[in-house]
Length: 373
Image 1 (cartoon, rainbow, N blue to C red):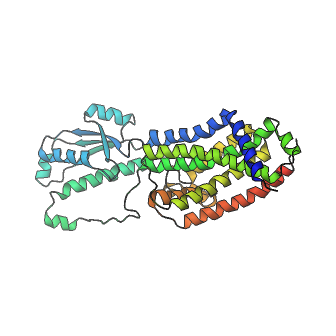
Image 2: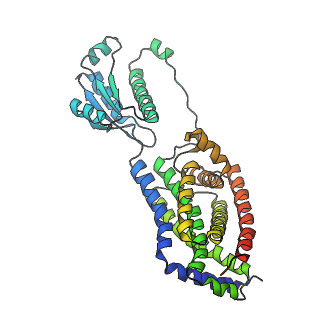
């Protein structure tokens, strides 16, 4: 029989035991914080600016206006380019070392040729070790040049220019740092559930308190439910810390569908805790459960679209994304927080994680029933 007072007593015991075991709590807390630092601060903290060198050998008004166009070009997130140096030798040296994505050189005869409609060239040198980076840098430069030329193009030339009209799924782009910070927040929800779920169970064997539990009149369901709730509370604590960091540092806003979001968060954290508990009952040692949890959680973070959207992933990762449960959590929470949408991702996520819970609970009961002192 399930008894509330028994469950609350077990939860109180688990929280006290966890307090005496700071290693597990620190690991569960530090992993998402380290991932947040690596992914957001190091890779996305300065927006989306590509570092370039800009060398201007022409002194005319046209070249100066082109310089201004390069300096002012920006998306709705950040400037296109960060001009690191305008010294020719320094720019070439940095480019050869891979410190610049491109060096743009406006030659001495640029103004003369442009004034006489002689199609002047600008010279570029690109450190093209990264295909995607090289492509983006070229596209941005082409966009800058197009804007510059259209200011001076005659009517006959203007009519020949292609002027595409762009449509987007959402009204505003999401800054990369906000997108990744949200991915780490979702990571902490599942990672914390699995780590605490397994650790709280393993502690019973490592501290030899499992003997008292198995010999006591406490029902197995009371034991299982208390472990899940204890783990969920600890996981939600870390999730709350990360949420505050996201709100105050990375400009994350929760504007709508709050009730749906809370429901999904609770189901995911409870299901994650149940999966972690099952892992702990099967393995019974943190030396194995913790590395497994860390490796799989980090892998799921990247494959599920926590660091970069699914559309940008390699084909193998996109195929894996379809079959792994965490991917649906990433996409459904991103839909709600970033785009204020509740769609099929949300429904699929609820169904999948409820099924995981339904599977993990009886499996944990059977495993606990077969456990030995």
